[in-house]
Picture 1 (cartoon, rainbow, N blue to C red):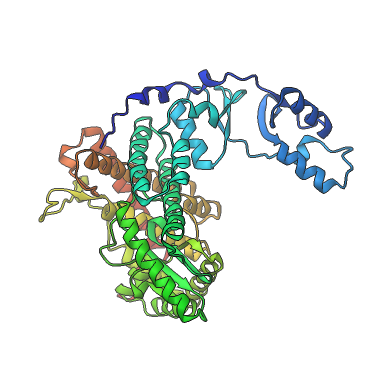
Picture 2 (tube, rainbow, N blue to C red; picture 1 turned 90 degrees about the horizontal axis):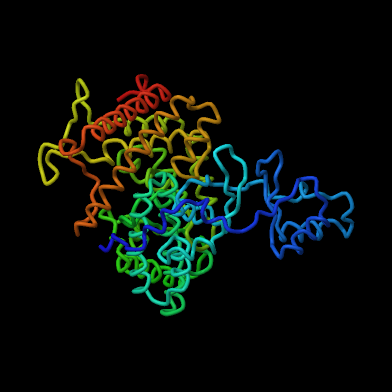
Length: 484
């Protein structure tokens, strides 16, 4: 894997050095007509809105058109504050250009405000400024994906994505943003693949059906493109010929994703498997059966399915499935406790005095499985708490923040769980990239004995945080009162 990209040094220049354009700003109280004249004078399409030397929003031509259209022609008294977009994303002037690229790609925006250490706006940087640095950046890769005309081209782009992930890791990009960016690319690759299957092979998902991503892909928090986890839901009265078309789509998607380097799920949790391809009514019956009879197999299936997300097709079917899940949980409150007890079967591998408990036999003898050691417990436990609170969408980070806002987790508990999750996910990603660079398949396993002391101590602290979270789960669901 060609990870040592010669041009990568240009991505580590400071953002402040790239702000070459004069900063054109305005106050929130400026009238719309004055704002329009200012944009025309400088031949620009947007203004940064500044108040007390701090950026508070952005006012664009699009905002101006919207206000004019809604005003009935009377612009008197209308100010920029009325129409500005308050969400201006900024970056410190001392950050690396690579971090600016990832921020833009993650938020799907074209410009960033640049601020100094005091938070004062010192300039703007655009995607055009950054694209000139390096053609192997996320911004450029998105364009390449959109322009791909074959599955083989998509496969080649997938290798470039790995190169980009390595560069971002070197730059110290935060793990949450990095994971979300990887998931964003995976979505783009999948969407382009669906387009190519339609255009080049005439294989389409018929109307009245939806292709669902499950598990980590459903949550939007993949590290690398690992095993496929997918399903299909379709309308109850879909004609037989459309059902056959849907089946062809499902089989070809699994084959094509494997060509792209996404291996099939070992447990066959894929849309090509008839057990994961049902009508809406059939899925509703399955959901009710999983919830009302919480045996191990049902809890495993439910855990995979609950984070479903419609990647393609009729998104209203996704909403109906989520509604069914929430209604089923509300009717069967004890189900949550059974799932919680199942999660507690995966305690962190720490013995007395903080000694690591490693695998005793097999090819991973002497190692720790990071997924079983804590990532699984946190993702499943957070999803469980969120489900009880009526939250069925978002990443683990999104759900943690909502749980804290609703008072279900304290601020201290949020910090503990988030720190543990961040460390374990980052460590897994680093190990996976290292394995790929050596020509080996990615793995979830680490050997604590060969880790530097500082990293080993950090792993121990993260696993202790997992233990703290499992105690929260145990107490929240009063598992001492649940019969075994």
